[in-house]
Length: 318
Length: 282
Image (cartoon, rainbow over all chains, first blue to last red; front, side, top):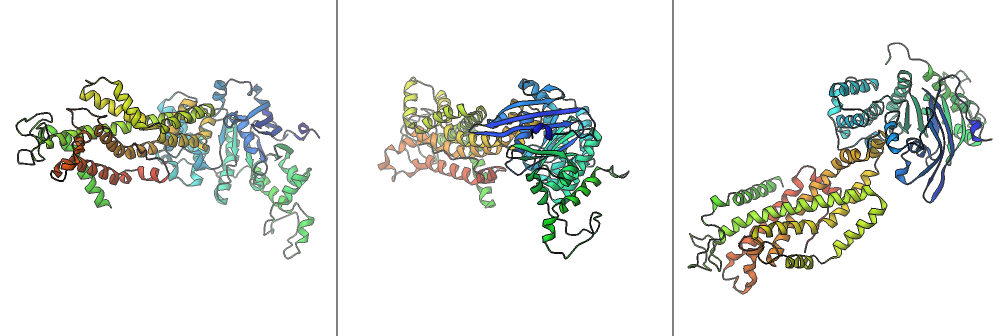
């Protein structure tokens, strides 16, 4: 089956196409790191890119930002943002897109923030990359960005160094930096894998809210199916530099078509307690063989998380 | 340890203050010759005696401190700045330059420094003024001392360039120059400070070595190094141990600088992190 036919636009989102890519990427001496990786993102859509480490997920992020060249990589294929061909764009124009239209959030917030600069100075650098410095405007926008990541009462972080922040706080700061210019596409490369479970779920909630409020598309790169299920509209499964399967979250977890996807879904750990599972009665104490017969047990529990996450939050909850 | 640092700091401060206020501390100029009383032992008039030209050794010691304590930090600043600039630029310019500059560094490290200094000084006219000789000594030391530490800066800058926060900065649309100035330089600062403070005592000694050989500061300007040339007649040293005063001054200053080194903020951690390297000159 050709890769293109694996891709179906999520009808429920129903927004115009933002990004379409078909990326080939080679490193010197290592060819085919990415082989015709086809991705399409509608505006305001969250696409999960899942794969084991080394499958090329992060290379996709670099290729879309056209930053893979710093590691000596060669990118070819097709890369369109709003109909503009990014691959043929001059570096200078590409720079006006980075940070302004496509932003990046990396895995480890403490490594992604410059340890020698105060947070405020890092906001200033991000601002200067695209806008002229005007103090009142800058301060207003930074305040707004901090508000959007639920750091409204934390103006004092601007005077701090990254080392003085907790990981969760630093990740929020990093996201605030990324959305400073209200990008249309946010690439989040394993943004939660360095966080503890509680902070992780807070950050996932934050992504969902940002998408709603800013109509921002998110390419959510992760190896963690749990967070992908909770957040994404569609999921693309990657293996060895190629996309194996791409479908709505529901379809991926309920009826995975490819063998690799099936193996992934089967590997999701079953929640220990299933009292509130409407799909099946509680069956504690049954032999383990049962689990083998019903591979989608864990996946079903995940889907519920997914459905819950898609519902609009009750009024009054930030 | 803190008490020891306090002692070192106050000793150094005292020496620096005395050198700066040499005019007030000394009754005689460093070049005033008292032809009637050459080679005198210490007396009330001449606390450290006189040299063979009848110049007051104490005055020369105090004024010499000016030269020694000025040249060393200046040379350290020059070599550190060169090393940081060349190292960081090499890292930024990528693979092809990497090889070229590495070859230059190896060449610099392989060259016999004394020979270069001899050649350089031989090319200068004999009647070079003492003050020009100070500037030249300083420049030569600074230019010869960069290679080893440049390597450290290159590695440090290269690892910074490959860091996540640089990727983040590029992804935010900053241009290459801005990312360099805003993100690389502040992160190199601890290493630069550490390198400067490590290099300073080494350059105090390097200046002394050069002047001792007659390649550094020239007469009549005094420096602790060229005052030690009196030791050429070492057989007479036991009879007049006071000629060792400049050596003692050097010893005290270098010890104090080394004692103060880890106390400086930021320097300690940079030293532990391998941020700097000692560069033994001569």
